[in-house]
Length: 342
Image (cartoon, rainbow, N blue to C red; front, side, top):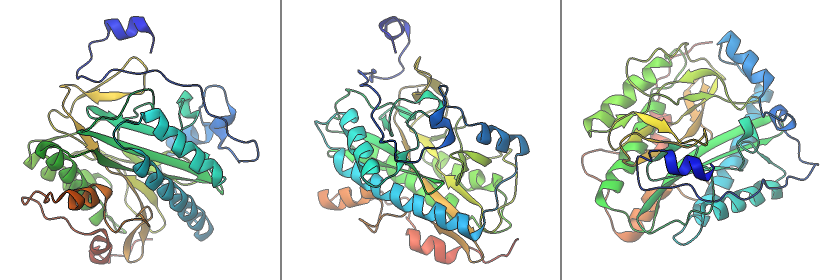
């Protein structure tokens, strides 16, 4: 974002863009997705998949490749979580993510995608999603979403969490906790035969019951050999998402929940999406595989048995808001309906 844009743009909240460092180097031995080899960062195979608007039913071999990519990506998300502490820049978090991917022989999926300049997204406070890592210093009391994506073995992984930077306010605790509950509720109804449009019908009443808005301009997506592909997974009620879940579909559930209005606006960098009223936003994302038993979450952490924000709250002795009961991820999988659909 140039200086003229910074002066003329009507920022909705207190956050301002910082300085962006040059694109980081990926060794040539690491296999790249197709868009990383083009100047515009556009994947022609992705574009073709959206022309069909049909979810990809993966083979057993493809599922295993996706599972591997999801595992690497989740492990790097945990690296990012450990790096995101008060006093460090979001660019430093990006550096930790980039280095962790390269050490694993994994290409950072966001790097160069549609010209995105960094190896992860760091969405701070009023940023809904797609925040670009830069010289911004994380401050005590911030919340930040860390969105991590990696490509390895011909498949992509993608997951994110919102965490607290230092001790949070009561309002931030309620927002982040509600967003997690929304995410897990959306996943809980995923099973063979379920309609994609009903994910939003499950999520919206929880968020709106707290006076929050559910973002409509960005959705979850199919993922695997392609970074983004059908189905579109909308998170708001009465949406028009197309399709029915079937065994070996893989997609993300990733609701963005705003403390105020659901409406958003894009910064002049054409990536950073912020809340229209400048209030905070939170998000969680998991990759979901549809199985004969219901679903399997592919991006659970090996480092913690719960989302990291709950680890933080336990360390500070801060209770979860009592108005909402969290269902553990394992229970969600176990209780998923057993309907079959091929």
